[in-house]
Image 1 (cartoon, rainbow, N blue to C red):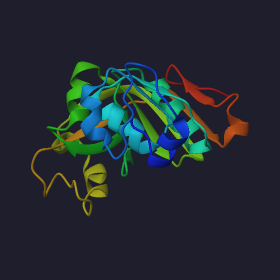
Image 2: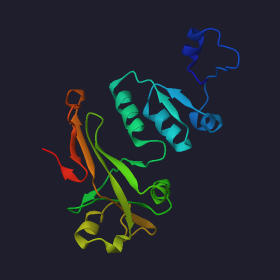
Image 3: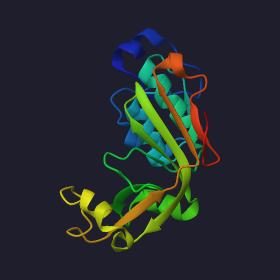
Length: 191
């Protein structure tokens, strides 16, 4: 059990078979763990995802509730992308990444994904199948949107396009809007 020094003092005696430690980096500890129980901070959540450790999240704050819900919605194996840059070609959400990335490896196993757009307070989730395409296959107007970006496929070798075709879109702003947040289902707009 990794805890902060103040928490360790307040914790008191731990049961047999439990070792409480402080000052241990999660990326060093998690490869030895069969599960991760935590409050849902993004550092712990993403480190757990990176190491493929099943997680039980007990959130305390709104951003932790958001992160826990997103983690639960992705399933244990499904890729979940948070693209800093994307383009809309009228049919697909287009993103660029390196061909050897973990996301590409995951998409080769399960060609469906979820992209989270926006902020923790104002979020849009897009679920659907993803095709991997060569950037040269994309229309020039879409490639041009990536011209000045770090993963410009015309300047950076090894870039591949991820084209997510929306089948389900959920959108909301804050907790009051959670009921009825699905605006697309089965590829059809609801309304």
